[in-house]
Image (cartoon, rainbow, N blue to C red; front, side, top):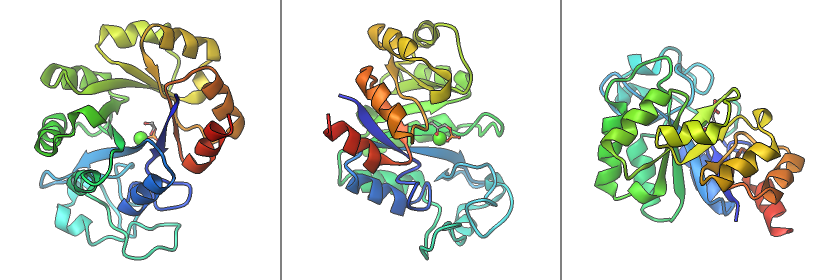
Length: 239
Ligand code: G3P
Ligand code: CA
């Protein structure tokens, strides 16, 4: 059965990467959420996509230049009408996950800003909350996936791919990743079937087109990552 991951939460309808978007994603019967993590100046793991706060808050500047308490003062509602929406810490997300069974795909946003210790801190928090079997790490920084696997081999890793990689299931297996998370525009159904047949989960992003959702589901894909979890659930249930 194909799983549904709500990309940055239910981000088509609610401010991305906020508790509101995650809670609403749970209401759509998504199987999991996808979120992005970075570190503040004082070392808090926070959930935000961009390296700067400019697009999604009323502030400006780099996440890494903020202390957590100052980041929390920003409004993270951007184009939506919600008020009092803040950038969550990963700890806040984990506290909420104690009340549900959702999976969580944590994307390390460490391809440009190095964020020393991001993997170690995240793994320590996962251990504290006993969530290792509900987490999938991913990153465009594949060294980060190798590093994560070395220090926490029990937590699943996946390779984010914006471009094509030749036989990505072989590459993923070689670095001990259990999944590939490709841009959905860069894969064929034949690649999906071969990867899945080789035991590598394929979870493309960001599949919002109902036609593509149907095709991937029919091909037996492990999961899709989407801003539109309601649409995906409707398609799955209509089968
Ligand atoms: O993890 C899938 C997807 O979120 C990767 O791209 O830019 O939306 O973080 P982006
Ligand atoms: Ca992401």
